[in-house]
Amino acid sequence: RERIPDMSNFIYSINATLPIFLLIILGKVLYKGRIIGKDFTTAADRYVFYVALPALVFKDLTENEIGSRFDGGYVLFCFLSTLVSILVIWGLTELFMKEENQKGAFIQASYRSSAALLGLAFIDNMYDGAGMAPLMIIGAVPLFNIFAVIILTVKGDNGSARPDLKTTLRNICKNPILIGILAALPFAFFDIQFPAPINKGISYLAGTASPLALLSIGAGFEGRKAIKKIKPTLCAAFIKLFALCALFLPLAVSLGYRNQELVGILIMLGSPSTVSCYIMAKNTRNDEVLTSSIIVLTTLLSSVSLTMWIYLLHSMGYL
Image: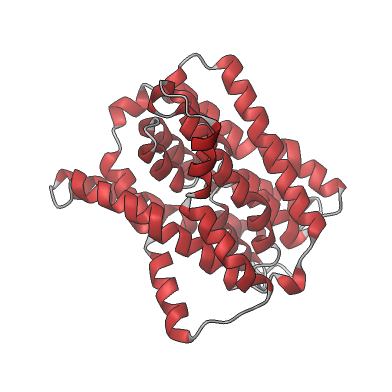
């Protein structure tokens, strides 16, 4: 049963997104004050990508009893809607976007949600538990990362170097976030518990992912360059926060998904672009300026958009 009234959704959304902005601003202040520099952001990006984000995904999956509540149909819906979203966005981008050097960043940030970072916390705030969010993560997050590796590898370095199939497959297999997901699945399905000190250590590592990534975004954010890319930023924000939800939420409702299941799908489709987009774009020589702009704008607008979707779904009796 829902634990917060409708008007509290906006306050909760603000509480969820305001710390993100504060950390981005802090990153810029620390960079301007020469407390952190490019060496710090480079090291932080690598640490978040190779250590903290895999630990975060591992923690999210292993902390919930997936095996006892596994729903193949729900996982398949999340998988297929994610796959269709990615392919449609990729195809339309190739047709209509002229700037080749922006395509990889645009595609990734237009579909890749903060499902793991935001989903569990958001649903737990509304209901007595994470519900189906871990199953949504299984259905969507691997695809998020597989296609991010493919797209950013193909489009990296302004698209000047086209890797072969072997190189792309090797990069997919080496992706640390995917490795974290695969490593977590046996523990999650069979409810294998770690000793308390190990759990605490994994939680400590996972807890460093978002703060360090946001500080790095703030330190590297260049407002003047970002303003020059306002058109693709606005277009990506519209796709991320509104278009995907408008396409797939009615289908989810028609299939009978309600409450936690429906909110999980909403988070998968309409939450802001994840901060790991920036880390991956930067590490693959894609347009990190456009990526950071989309992350900042979608995070800013998501407080309103998520509240709007929750209000609409609740008023129609689906939540």
